[in-house]
Length: 326
Ligand code: ES4
Ligand code: ZN
Image (tube, rainbow, N blue to C red; front, side):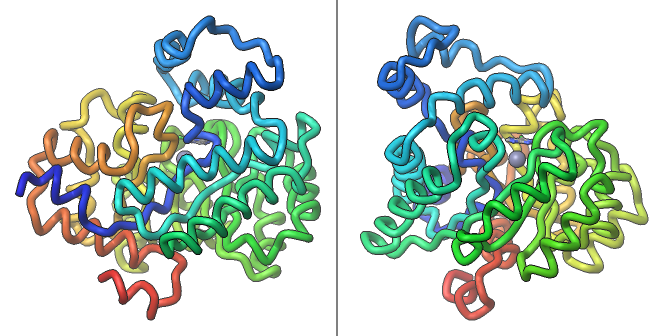
């Protein structure tokens, strides 16, 4: 069997996925018309053509503008439902999905609206094909600590729907230490902790995420190789890294997929995983990320198998449930 067919048929977990980054251009177009939102594009093809980035910030500007079409409960239902249907097609049996409350609350769209839409889609996927889904609330790090505290407090009625809390958006200039106190509160509430670190930011930000935020997982973390002591610590503690190859390529963290260090980190014994990040913006869902690694880095069968096992081992599923897929 061709490796791309095998990749697509094997069960896998996705642990780093921004639901707002799975908004398909066709749905963006449809919702813009529904709500009479004026987009700076005159067709779906023009939206797609605009997805050329030279940095994390140039992507984020489009990502936040695109999210403006999400207004009512049904929009959030459709957004989540489309992604979960992709999961079914791609044999993603478990997904840990990030959402950015502040991207919506700051536009006047309340928690009640998006949480109800998400819940309806997730409940349906659980019932229809036994999909397992956890939600990760993410703070926007370009906003203040006070706004993060507010966002956490507003989520209180929905705590039972949320498994972990994370940190995303513009990394440079917004180190994890800015959020040390709010993550102490997050841990006190019993949530798992994740943070984007070492994507565009330096290895120092990964240190801070580990030591100050006490993360259970690092999102990206590919710059850990710049610090040998850090690399040794991540390996020794088996702190998972949720790596996103196509994202790194599109945002120019690397210039060529052949330069990606994920298989070096894997062979070194780190608990690395493959993920799609913002699939509609970066040109591929999860299976495309695996296929591109196979093509650019000649990933072998043993490496593929280990990456699939890691996707479950690095998840927040209880060990007995992980075991069912390993
Ligand atoms: C993101 Cl790739 C990436 N990095 C940081 N924040 C994000 N939010 C959505 N995608
Ligand atoms: Zn991300």
